[in-house]
Amino acid sequence: QEGKQLRKHFLKRFEPGENRFVDVETEETSNGCVILKDALAYLECEVKSRMECGD
Image (cartoon, rainbow, N blue to C red; front, side):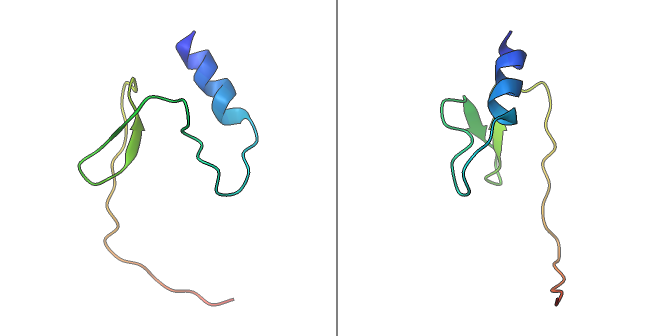
């Protein structure tokens, strides 16, 4: 049931800038990523470089 509620929550429309994680239990990883508290797994990444692109 919990998974079904989470899917419904994240499938709804959010306003730009609106916090999608309100009323959802989360934890913060060591590098500041927000993850779902009851997640069975998650992927944590780190940006090593960036490339600026023009129009």
